[in-house]
Length: 155
Image (cartoon, rainbow, N blue to C red; front, side, top):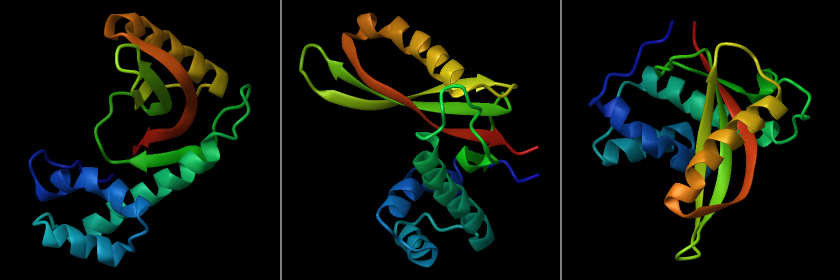
């Protein structure tokens, strides 16, 4: 089982930057150098494990949108994680809302947590219920939403 990332460590502080660096096309070596320049360098073996997770997440996002509504997302849509999560599966649904006062669009995500595998239809239906509950309260209008990928707790 992988190690849990300790709060406040350089490794924990570096996590938000990893996705951006991967999306910008950095190699693992250049990304680690960039983190070190920012004062967030940490053990290379741990960094490479995190980097593989981030790169796997990008691949899973690309595949997730093609899963049929009556199908269970397969291994290609899954990213194993060593971060703490209460349930075995965290299904990530991305959605876009429009602020009714300003007209500004915001890109957000909603997580459906469960210990059982779910079909894409069930995932999106559950997420829509949760998202819809708060739209009026915050003055938003839902523009679009879709299943993205699954985080699986490492056992």
